[in-house]
Image (cartoon, rainbow, N blue to C red; front, side):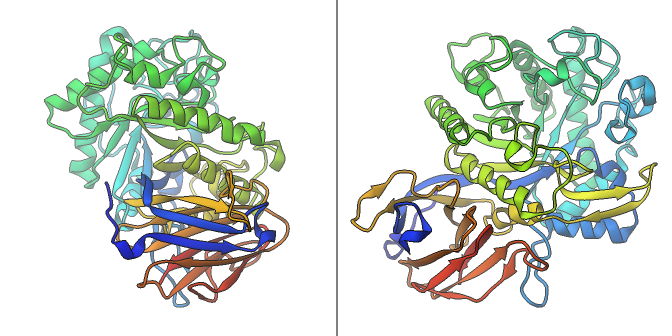
Length: 523
């Protein structure tokens, strides 16, 4: 979507004191040079929602409100973070196999709509479907169905993991069409039975990730680029024959470096952008395949440290995406063992330490990789840094409670206020002499700023202060309709979760507290 702005909205002028940004004293956001359109922010239901979706109403409703609500309380404080995208894990059938599935934890086994006799059981995955409906009731309109594995009836080893196999797709050759038809039937079935329209379906998940080449921790399968292309074409044919406009999203790379080069793999799985969207790649080209958009999905795992790589890898990714005219969604990430700055992934952290670290990732994915969408991995997790929320359940998983975190509200600075259809605007920073400060919108240990204009005309600026000291900020928008800004503060402390604080007059000074995120919304 392109936006045209009136002459009176030619630029936002933001002045920042010298102490607020290394070398920079002035920011200018130029609306005459709009950047990418934002399609939304999201998370996935794997694997917790199959359990939490069946817990008592008080827990389910609170969880849904935290994730999806765009309402405010009586004091104007948001009740939730307003996710606008929800990923639904379409199960492969490991649940019915129990321990024979090779997956030790019942939390990570999934049901399947397809039964062994070829019929469909639309009572399967009830907890996840409850959250599909609750998300839609709270305003979510973009739903993605993703597969970790084909149904077990179609796999080469009869399992949803890659146990005992090599690095190829765990799908029998004669079942490509059956898998595609199953996917089309799921799209139709969810709309018929739940009123949920899947906007996108992802046939594979992390096909280039070495972790799922051996099994058996969780559902997953590797795949070569040729196999992914064949699968995408089969899905396209099945969707076209049924008259479905659901898009086929590829290929959920496990590491950005697999998208534009090779990383811990070989040529059969690397260079994904070139393989699928360069016409010279005749065996794997999907640029003319119905229902396949020029859009790549990738995961930002393992690329967030050191700080030089955080920016450099994303710039390489953006260069390749631009070369082949491909758009980009970041569809999955969480904290991994190499994120040593915050102690790695082990042990859940409800504090600003993890929240700010992730906000820095969001900023870099949007600014340097040009992401049109940013999605966290699990909406709810356990004692690991992989959930926006933390669950505490009984051994059987039949009941429990859920608590929030600063990580949830950090993402909310983007998802709650930067709505689908918003346009990001570039920022130019200058010093006191008027000289341009390169990368002035990004001090990775200080202020990181992004600005947006929503489709309704409202302005949003997100300021992440990674530093241990406060930053003074003065800014002005050259728009006669804007008289003031409403700031929302996320910081350590009770109640500081998108907390509305004193309004800031246009051109007046404000303070970004140490180790905080403040989002300004025009009024």
